[in-house]
Image (cartoon, rainbow, N blue to C red; front, side, top):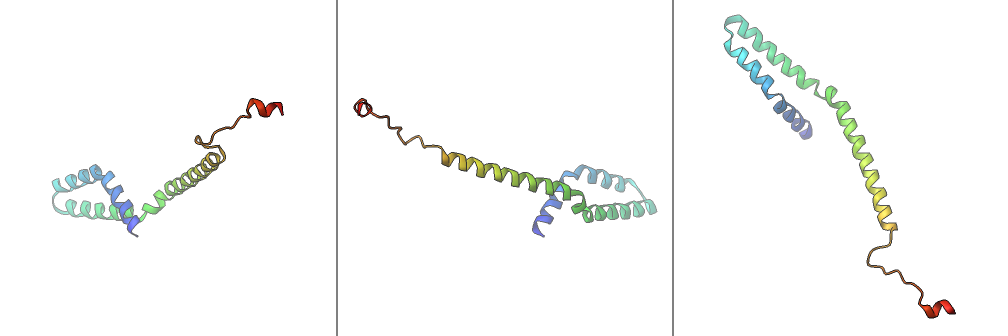
Length: 101
């Protein structure tokens, strides 16, 4: 739940100029138009928040798949690195006397 609120808040911040425009339009209206537009704005924001998961489901699934693929790549790189001889190990070449024997 905490993550959901964090994501919705981040998305609200991204939409800030839209909300500023809606609020400024609401400010210049008078009478019943102000009331109707105010209710419409609140309903639109409520629907927008309610459908947040529907709109971001594909995005989160894609991010999860990319994260899993990256983890697999990291595992493969670790295995490759472990299979390579380390730089501190010296490669011992046979000496000239050993070759003759």
